Amino acid sequence: MKITGLLAIVLLLALSSQPLLGEVDASPEQVVDTLGKKLRVGANYYIISSLPYPKFGPGFGLALASLGKPCPQDVVVVNRYHGLPVTFTPINPTKGVIRVSTDLNIKFNTRSSCPHQSTVWKLGGFDFSKKQWFVGTGGVVGNPSLETIHNWFKIEKYDGAYKLMYCPSVVKSPKHLCKNVGVFVDEKGNKRLALTNVPFKVKFQQA
Image 1 (spheres, rainbow, N blue to C red):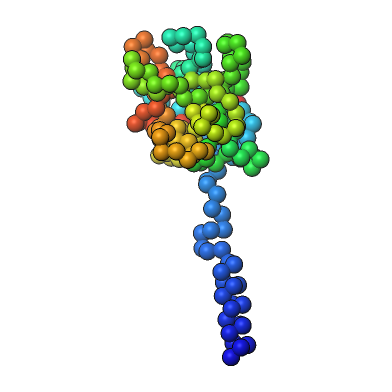
Image 2: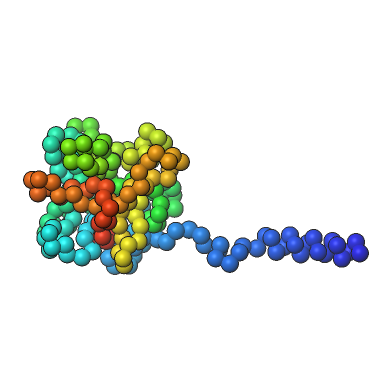
């Protein structure tokens, strides 16, 4: 009886140490570019439309513009142009690849016209006149905390392509927004990245 009981304990421990079905690779899916290659940390990419948008023109990319005030600069859509290259830095950059549903920083790989101002994306304050949250710059890379919570974005799969979201999970707090990043066209025709209900369908092209 003692031998039988010992064998039962050993068998139970062996089974409990085995991964369950589907738990072998629980990491989120890797993001790929227009050529099907994995997005790499620190590499340059253009964020471009996955389909032509009639009201925006035959194609678009993303760039910087000073709207309303010179600094910090805003992230805007530009027509017939692939825009400025960006780099992606996830919360754990040592992994080397970019995955969906993962907090990351986005930075334009260019110099800002604003002195001592970074080109890292950052959610700006609420614009009461336009009733919108706009995406601007002036953020920092890394250092996840409540102070940097507005600097973190995510890439999600969407309708055969991808979309960007502001839905930070680097700090657990029920007070932060979780919305799609879309396009808001203002009264002057400027196409600005903003938090919207309708997502912005994009793809990533190596620069």
